[in-house]
Image (tube, helix red, strand yellow):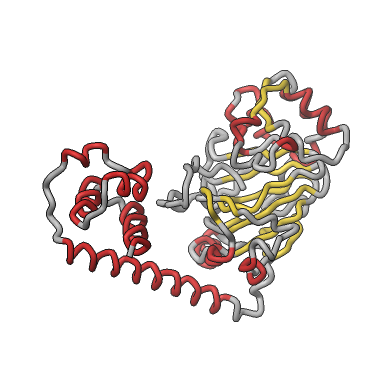
Length: 349
């Protein structure tokens, strides 16, 4: 019965129910204040000890708890059904590569369908692939102070603990670090470093063109730079918004898992999986053995549409530059709940 009540608490927190009313129901059902504090965590209402108004009878509350648990099981079963049906497709392990996709077709077949696709003809007129040499980058905005993620090798949780790895450097210094050609995951300029938010970096935006069939035209808002050496890795996680990944230079190895495979992912914190998808430990994470992991390589000039909620792991196979976008013409804000932890607005992949 304790588990059913904990499930009831979790479900009602997700639904945004009044914490004080929830606490009152638990009191009415003989739970102590310390027990309720443990069950509700940060949502525990400090005023509960003085709260005496109880609007729900014990029997009705117990029925609600059981009904909520049953509803959770039903939701889980529906996700499993959707997963099983999706796997019937002969294309379940592949991602389409397309040209000539109109905005309307993209919206209907991919964006609204939560389906990834690689668009191969969007960067035809971009100057960045040819112009963004180390010399050009330094000449254009090398004196600008930028933020990077550094000392990532010291912390296996560098992605979820990103605040500890932020470092300010002159951009020309960072360009030289990358140009050394050393394979490493120790430093990386990522979307979270908000490169294009600095006035001195916006000069690079003239070398790209916005995909106006799909994206809003902005002064850099919703544009993010990923720049790093061969060997940089973004661990398995999901984004809370839809993303375009435009590959400017270098190749990236990407592993995707559909959003509806969440029961196999071992997502215990925010948007992160505990699984090292490149070397999965099936003894520790046995369900992951059954996950549909889709492998692809993104080449220069290709744009990957990464749908909201899809799990992904990314590794740079060469020195790599990517520009990501989330400023779509279509709605791209969603309500999310996570196991624990908070998540900033999605800014990249």
